[in-house]
Length: 98
Image 1 (spheres, rainbow, N blue to C red):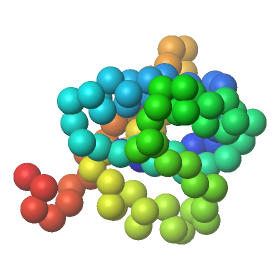
Image 2: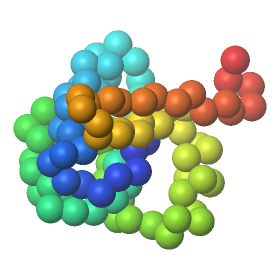
Image 3: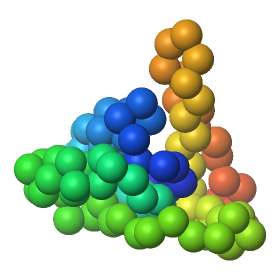
Image 4: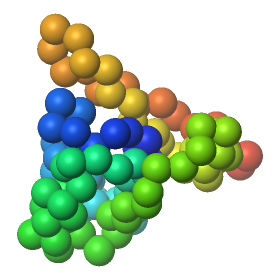
């Protein structure tokens, strides 16, 4: 799983990390958070508090590198702030996945 986002409170990445913790109980998956911002320290602390060794953080990257990085992930999370929080999950079509 992957998300590419500016790490600010409005993006609710903490909710995604908590959801990942529940998914991790049933599935052998990892989660990569690409981006930086003022919430980084809080998110790393949450990861540590939940003992999630398979959540990884990486700094922001050039926009042209993002599509290739996403290709290696089965799921990506894209969040759009509207009247209510909407989290969109897109399936990455990897060769041989289906």
